[in-house]
Image 1 (cartoon, rainbow, N blue to C red):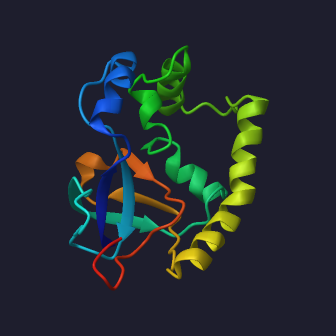
Image 2: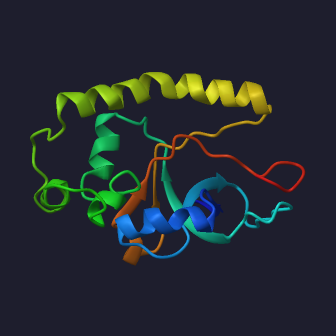
Image 3: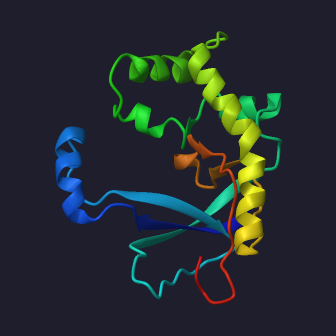
Length: 172
């Protein structure tokens, strides 16, 4: 268990959001979460930091894509599936996802194209992390799977590609 800081940075200028927001039926500021570990405070000299949430996580260091990892994720709503659960995608995927999580099917519901995209990510993720480390000189910690320590949030989980700690200058 460790304390983690989840920070949010805006990815679009508010004026650019209006046409997009009407299509998504979403009003407000679109942000992208950037998790960072081992920090309980957040600071931003540039002013882009819009929120910081500190929480306790139950961490599991099982290898991602292992049988244990799939078992941990089986009945959880994960960061990868959250937008689908909220209905941001067209088609039947939302109902299929809810069916998967409630009834735990043994069959694989991914298409060949989706599987190929995921395999590309699995192959290239370590390369991308090493490239990031060589450019920034910063370390990237790995985490197999994490859930919130509070039981009421135990149905949500995440498998981040990498965790960044705070840098020596107080930024992320």
